[in-house]
Length: 269
Image: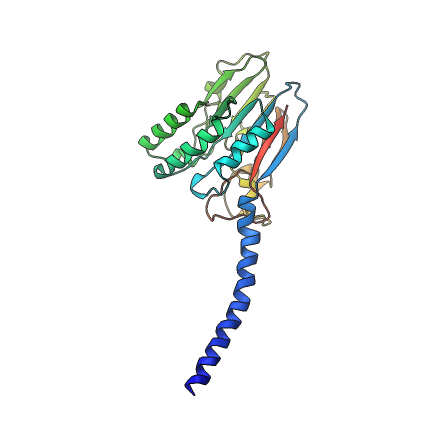
């Protein structure tokens, strides 16, 4: 009787495993692989600048499965003129060493790099924010915190995060030249609904392309007016200029993606 019960229990366990293993494999394939399988999106906009910008957005180092070395190799392969980092490095100070490692890998390629902050970055305590700013500076990444940079043929304008109330549009554009093209860097693309001035191009992130490709997801998760309209990724247009929303390379919330791959974007303007 005991032997029969033992055999029966083993049979039940084997049956459970037969079902669990394929389920685990499917979960890994559909939820984890998209976070590691980096996609290079290519966008061409006839802005007449003759430049290539590589955009890295929504790093979220605490849940990042794309290795710094992979980013460094990608930069070497693409040879961009500039690198744009559009926010959300981390929300916790204990992960700042990982941010430092990632930024060093990106900035070590000798390409001029510019950054803005995201909503997660603004959750850092004051000491953590000072440390993040120092890390960016030490890596040679220029933080455009509501300010601009004149690159000769065009201008970068960095507008701080809109969703957390840190955007200062007037301050960001204060020292720009009216006759020069403007490329705006920001984190939350909802800024375009308040940016009532012409721009040549704008790059943002924030939405992760939904992260989980589930219809009507952002009707239940509040991400602002654009997301509510279903505008969560890709190239779009306003009466003031074209803008692009990156799907980002890291994750927030569950460390998974569904039918949305991690993305680095190459913009040819």
